[in-house]
Image (cartoon, rainbow, N blue to C red):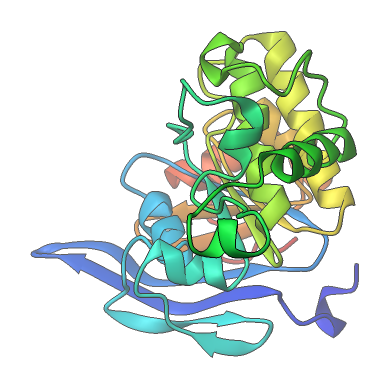
Length: 260
């Protein structure tokens, strides 16, 4: 990818966010390019969570601007970001355990039956939701025994797969994943990492927030390193060691001159 000739699909310039006397973001910049997996890493207090919340509409920055496809956008809520085709998979997943997989994929975006029964009586088009949910899961090569299974019967990795499939089904621009492998075993972690790659292969760039450095270096095309409220470096995993990333993240190595 020639980044010099490519417009970022998602960009932030000079974001500032203060909480009283605490400055969580101090002029933070960010660029996500088409067709890439960009990992965001940083020590506790680096501002990466605040940055992602600004990008997903969960909080409003005090200063700076956010651009989508080169055009300024201002999100007042996560719903605003979703309307712009930005879907977020949060660490707590936000799935409904008692509902089945198909119902979870369309949670909050249920399809109504055509005609009067749908518009006037609100009857759901469950066969269509089942068919479309099955197609989404198959497209991402997610193996589930039955789409009618309640989500509470699934393993942690399978629940994560349902949340990722829901995001990929409705995202038009970007999928943001917040610690998607947290609390998963080795096998399920690899399943989720493969799923992240498949989302990217479908043409959706992915923002991956993770503390797991081996996972980051396995799947990321570039790594955005956040420190003290701003971006200090962007590195290419194939050109740096994990220890270098940690050193930049903690301030043991200067990151100002490092570029991917």
